[in-house]
Length: 481
Image 1 (spheres, helix red, strand yellow):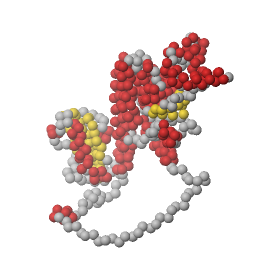
Image 2: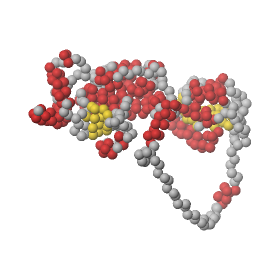
Image 3: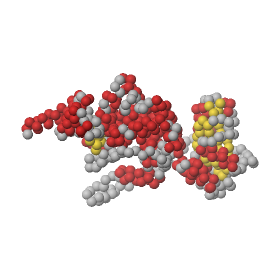
Image 4: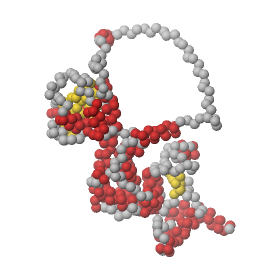
């Protein structure tokens, strides 16, 4: 008994520091397969791994359930054989409480998860660093060139995939509020990165080399919620090489052991206001301070002393200069829309639908159904000096400057102004919805809310369409609301 106790204790001390890094590769245990099919070296590898596990302390990964960032380390551990104990639920770990405790913050000052604690006391946070630590040389890249390529795609996942994916997917999960313009921009960015990946994977099975690497693991995890929530068959159709590679990775036993069976999106998920409200209610509940006392008794409010009244001393009047006297003598500006009768069309309600709902199926039908032709008017605007437009970013700044100068008009107006064309060959035009029937310029008598008008408004509000009256391709647009 004493001998085996000393043997086990010594083995438990040596294994974390030596066995993990210097164990012969022939002793690595396959992730699946019956014991009777193992060759002799693999059998002894399994024997030693099982024996060592009885004495050594496992490495710990702190996270919350279904954290895609933690999946990177867990999948890498499946390939390397590193043994991880995952703490993701009470009583061992409670996100928002455990990671704010002094003991946790002493090891991980930012309180971020996933967080890794090694069997030798080594601590590290950031998901990429954890995945790198538990990986093997094959996963990291066995040559300097391969290692650089792996790092390139890991950074690509974090900088080019995760930001637009979060903007698009999080509202469908109730994590963020929906913003139409931001979501549309995110969709285009996702389309762009998928195009880059599709071209790279046209002649490749995996991103780097002929086997799975950390590059594949990181990108699959970054794309996971996109494929589960919003990349429906129509959207992912043009990127067949990416989907082929994604499914190839998912079908690897090491990926399946962590992710299970992943169902690809069949219908693009939309923002769920109810789910968002429930999510915010949970956050607010977590932020409520704990009540003092075992029975939750409230402390009596402290009586505040009434502030001492100070006598106001008469201040000497400042003398106005001539300019200030002229300005003071001018009558205060009146609201130009104050004389108009109340309109049944509520512009703020339309703006909310335009910002938070689908434009074509929700916002535009609401607009045409409730638009008050007597109390409101539609205007078409066009920049009169297109020959002076040079760089497109400078032209876009012109639009922004106009919106800033018309800031007081936002309460009674809505506009979509679009820049068409390219550098040194562009034009600016737009559609305005304004209170009343008059402007500084005369309303065109031929203007009617007919089919052509609806088409024009639809194109400018959606930033999509033929724009036949312009003759230049759409470049970018801005909304005044």
